Amino acid sequence: MWIGERVRVGVRVGVRVGVRVRARGEVMGMTVSDQFAYKKLIVWQKAMEFARCVYPIASQFPDFERFGLADQVRRAAVSIASNIAEGCGRSSNKDYGHFLAIARGSLYETLTQLELAKSFGYIKTFDDIESIAEEISRMLTTLIKRYTIPLSNSHSNSSSHSNSNSHSNSNSHSNSNSHSNSSSHSNSK
Figure 1 (cartoon, rainbow, N blue to C red):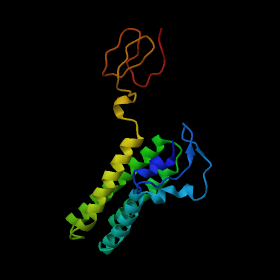
Figure 2: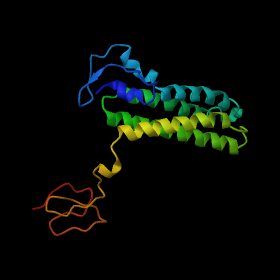
Figure 3: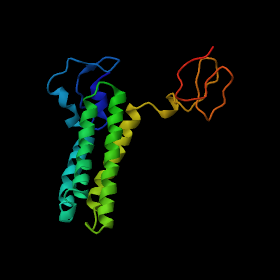
């Protein structure tokens, strides 16, 4: 497996980082230029552009919002690219997907705050950056799907297993040999 596969989704076809990765995600033979592979991601570049566009919009807010909504919308916009970069620095695909999901959440947070600013009359519109946001959202969703485990395959505490060595939540049926408290980790025999 190559890290270039991670980068390839958001980068021009054919660009590869060329760093070997062990099965557990440990990076081997990484050079200084490889460490900043996130800069090659188009989604990161778009997130940087988005943040640069949000700053002038936030400057249109009234002075009394300087340390309120204006500051909050700036921080949320900056968080998008920051979380993409931080995810690239993690050693597993699961961590990478987690930070991509946080970045997508920050994108939605920024759009919500801009929508509030519009409803308060601080700004007229933010249509010019909404198309960038839609593109970033699509890219992040694609990457998240690729690097996270589907929820249907993961083990959930809400699933019920009624055997002598299991515990289940209070909404499930249990036999006389199992516990029905989700915080219980002791086994009965």
